[in-house]
Length: 240
Image (tube, rainbow, N blue to C red; front, top):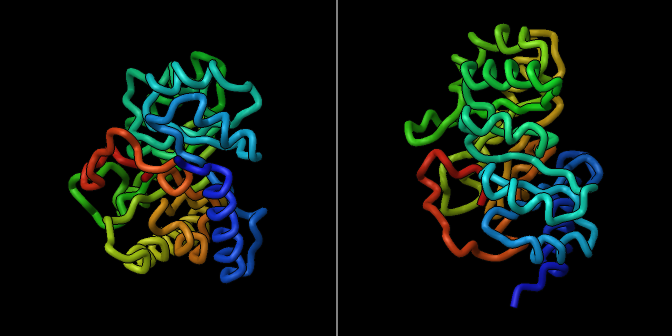
């Protein structure tokens, strides 16, 4: 039987230890507990031990689950957002981690204007240039960021990435460094603030925190294996 309290405490402690490496504290990192495929009663166990920020990757699942849970929870969308789901997603989530194209951002901005919303978003970067994954490649993001910044309804708060699957957590480090350095370069070039870095999942979140993550997306280490798990080689997976 999964002990969610023990798992959460372990993850929190490891985040706190990793934060010290980068001169930060646990207060500087937001743990997004990824609940996709897990039912509302499992989420309630995490709520009972103080977790309030949760992540979902499918709008349909979130629409069914979120109304069953306390209204004070904070929900982040971490999956690939299809345009026909934007209008359903925006009222549910305080942040969308996975805006992966200018076209999608423009669609979100248009619908947000129609519905009177101001979404907080992160821009997903395809750090390894993998054809199987969504996200901006770094040169394209540099070329399109000015257009993204002109979208009046969107609050662009930072970047997100999913590195290639590595056998060891250390294999992810170079990609986390690349994302942080890209963020720093964009801030300097465009004179903007991109304070959020969403990077790190169950197998590598400690390394991500050491390299500056402000948001980590952790599911399996807290809730155990999902019943239906897709291989990480596909572009649709945005959390473990």
